Length: 432
Image (cartoon, rainbow, N blue to C red; front, side, top):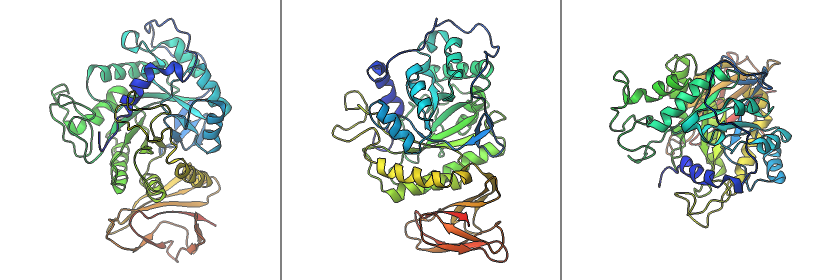
């Protein structure tokens, strides 16, 4: 698949050989759920602030996540991930050993349904496994669906997620939709199923309820599954500005109530594919761009370590994997974002675009001490040149450092900060 590479396909194939990568399984009688009553005590109680920031035991965090470990599983690899500032692993094969390793390195975990509950197609989710997850201080929530469609399997997951809402109300679930401007007609769903992309153009939607159009597939799925964390992946090789556009659409759907009362946050999955060439400027811009447009969590995907053309559909032999190609870039981005962590989890003051042309998007936050942070990114095309833009709603005549640059800017008497932006321009400003 030239434009988009199927994460689900790689996971499905590698999952069959997961024992070679991790050891141990949850103890389970694999019995169907008999009750929707909540289970016993939990170590982590997860909630959300009004602006979408996730909290663990009332402590706010900004997820910086990877889908797989950056290398073969080992103590050194877990330490490598933790020391790099990443705090979430999203689609790992969860078992007692991986939970323990994550705990030791202060990394949160998401439990992917078909691998955490291997008999989900027959028995649903197992309460005994759920309770073991609830007993781990690393456990954050459930990865319910990866690029869902309306086939039987994906509807099975929505049913399981509905049950988990009652069985484990302390942990949210995540759904990641496929989004790209040039998705092939057969990816990731065939012509008899529906997908949610911002063009809204796949074929037969006969399986959807009569009152739901294809453009409302995401809304329908979120409401049916009770998804709290809404996400999307956007793997186009060249369209970096488009990621911010789609983020803004999801944020609007969330904040206008289109997704219903269960949806609480929007995270974004970005590409770190080892077999796609990307520069640090491109990857940094994309990360700051989605934050500037309202995302409250970031994830990066690459092929798992151990992929080859035989066990990972779409993979080209000879390419590095396990995040190795772009690790230095990810490390740089993580380091910069961890420097402004207080701003990432801070109180949102404003979220919008410059007027009248919308040339940049920016988000203003304040930390617990009232210090201002600005996350900004241009929406301009490559041939637009450099444009001076004003960011308003800031304290008057106040100095801001430009993160990563030896520059300081000062707001004017009306609380406006002015800076120049160009294509793929992204800046973070911190009040001095």
